Length: 124
Image 1 (spheres, rainbow, N blue to C red):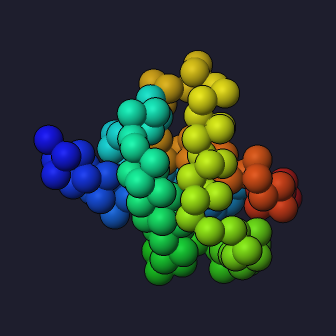
Image 2: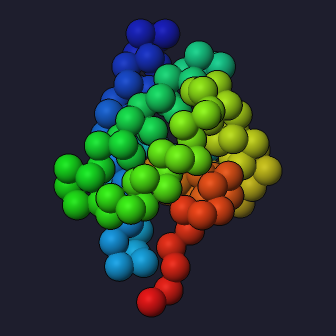
Image 3: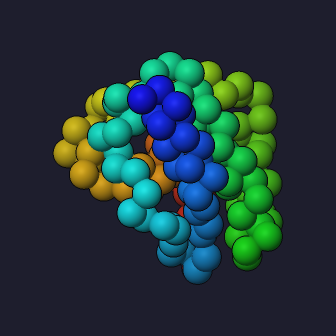
């Protein structure tokens, strides 16, 4: 059971890729993991997910993410370790149970928007 759970966490963070374009955020694939599932992760799994999520965002430039926004993200999270990122995600998710049915990747990104206000898209 533990191997399956760890495998699910690995799959979640490997397949979590998010990028912003034209003030519109696109998530792929949105069906991998609901936000509520994060509550069931152990501390180590939450940490692993946060590492994978940030790594997914970091390589999103390969598929067209705005390099300027990636630089903003990097400047915000650079001083943080994965435990801190996991805590940010955990707090955001626990504080908003009305979002638990939504995709985990989307709410992970929204949690980062709260922690990194300069990352919020600006209107043209």
